[in-house]
Length: 551
Image (tube, helix red, strand yellow):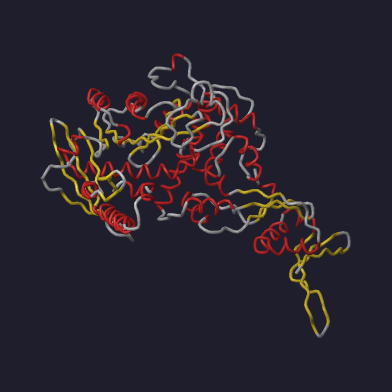
């Protein structure tokens, strides 16, 4: 089937024609007279017909051009991630807050677009801003066409720029910066979602530098990356009880976790107007001075205790004879979790002794296997066993030259199977306290899985401001990721994160030209990409469209 022109008198007519075989001969049969050529072009009938047919035959059209050897150069761009995260960028108000703050400044490039580009890069592959400049070439990102590396550097410096002296009210371990204003305005715009911000969790990570690491941020300290020779910085993220990022903090690399808790609490109350808050933190945050300061401020807390190293916990709390209260947490598709909790008070201090019976059984099974293997190997000689840390903890040396199993250590070790002890000043029931702390464990697990977004190395920036802005883009990436996860959960979807990104990344648009007209073809949707578009509320681009209609 094809279109044919035929001149009759002074006019040219357009016909829709098909080729048929009749009586052994090939003939052309007119299906429809579309009318005079100038009228057909004026009404656009032929264009609509071509586009309609092309939607069903785009593959055939491109393959036909390939067979003919007339296919022009193709421009191909990935569009899945920009479309999804652009909508989330808008719905979380990130773009609106940046635009609002930028109204007071006069930059000669679209700085908000530079920040979005950097955040999108964090979500997809992370890395340096130098890598981001090259990475974005393969993507169709609205408004980012004219951005270059120096624009990204300027955007990072603006995000981490220190506020004037008048804006430094409430400064603690770190100066107040533009990023703080962004966090506060995001919080204010989404206040309805944070109406019950009564529980907050904090977790930290460290980022090391290959270079100096700015003017003050790069310092040597306890390296969680096992790179003690390199300067590093400490990054903390504060998360609410729903796992939603609230704000971030950045300190020099020699800042100890235990010294950060109180400044963070003070800043939270001042920045976000929070009155009553229960702070939940792990064992690394606890100290006598910290607890006293929290109580002096009238703040509630649930803090993990180092049960093995605390004499009071070992000798008094764990020796309490009162029975524990059981709790079963049901799970879909996997075994239920059996928990126990009880309250122990000692000299005005309130402890909650918690035990996870499933973890206790696993720990006991593992220990039995290790001890059984150790008993067998001791018969063959004991010298080589000391180098194995799993064995070494159960060995003692009654004689100078020989080792034997420490039976008392095995019994003592069993006391801690599935056990964790909390200290709190809340009036919550023991089981509720335990569940609150378990929320922290869930948040920590989420934080560990998302630390790839924070590991933005290598960082080439030389100033504190640019480094802070660079890392803050990772916080904004966490905001978008959490928003996407919430929408997927509401749609009963739980795809693996990397699989989701790969499926989105396969969605591409190919720009081609035929007979002087440019068309944009979309590749088929694969994997979970289609369901993700539905969950976020974004319409898929048409399979084929006129390039002039984009913009």
